[in-house]
Image (cartoon, rainbow, N blue to C red; front, top):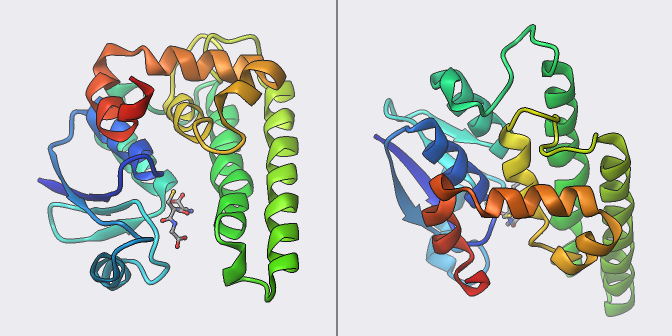
Length: 210
Ligand SMILES: N[C@@H](CCC(=O)N[C@@H](CS)C(=O)NCC(=O)O)C(=O)O
């Protein structure tokens, strides 16, 4: 049994969806990195960065980083379609966009969500928030222009990239912006929202979305 340390609506939803599609048995241990000191301490005991998701493997190994968790789930269950097989034509695009999502887009939230952690003063914090929000919009537009017409990020084949798109487009600048500016990404997100196999994951993580 795996243990996923998670907080509804955060990036742990990506790991939760991947584990679910892979059919790996897991329990959820909730921890709120923002509002509960006890949870923060627990999280830091597993991940010095204090970030979700954290996955504890059946043998006790602690795995942080969503992309590592997704790749692990894909390797454990190749039939899950989470990742194209090594050597397959879609593999290069998969690796490129996976890295792009976690290494380029994700950090804009790390530095923009609570900008006061990184720069002193309200003015500098507001500027950092604004700049990271703007840069994120640019990054999404680059991805929109770089992918094909769908129905998934990689074209005909669903992958974990589509899970990332579904979850991360719920965050700033949110779905209405994507609908207008990045319709391909918006269409992918909407298609993942409708996947029956992920309905329980979305209900737990985004109950307000109905
Ligand atoms: N590179 C990490 C980023 C994880 C991350 O930033 N998680 C957010 C939640 S969506 C978090 O835990 N933030 C709390 C913090 O950074 O203090 C990954 O891909 O898992």
